[in-house]
Length: 268
Ligand SMILES: [Zn+2]
Image (cartoon, rainbow, N blue to C red; front, side, top):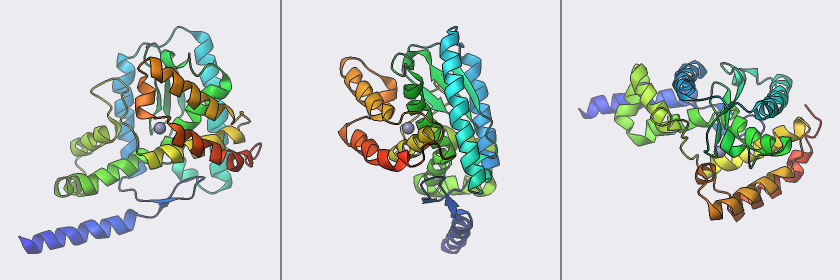
């Protein structure tokens, strides 16, 4: 019993060492990823199918054209940056797609496979291209920084070690599906994404600002947007706010990154 557990641990540790050397685009942070991009892509595509089947596309053509324009600008900047820095592999399995769904919910997300969805409810707050770029840059950042994979990986080793690492080693697709849903909170309820850790949130803000600058958007819209969300959330319940707390420390961090992001203006 003890011996087999030892053997199991050695295998698990060896596996961790093999997969532990990934680097986050733009921030350069080292991260631990246990899942292949291919695995994440197929789980993500399956979730997208489920979400889009239940969704009603918004009839507001202005919303869609604004979201699409900003989306193309930001993802083009990502592509150019990745190519320039030899990081194209980060974009493997990502097929960008931009959509607006009819929903009062104030929410937006980007799946790891590249589908970016804004709900019409958030368009009241993200009312200009710069404001849309704040939200979208942040959501794209979660995808290209592979925060979902990282969370799944952490879940796999810390959550229920025996069961989850066993699932990874056996690559049982249903078990991975369950891990994916734990990490993303998708599936049971339309587009409800579990909150990321504060570390991931701040990193997504930082990367998002950089992408905005590269694509020529006004990065000063970021603190303004979060301040707007912060005061709006005092009078009504905003879902995006519950997963993206915009307290003073977050806004202060964003302001702190502005000069760094500004250096990327026009640099792609
Ligand atoms: Zn976020």
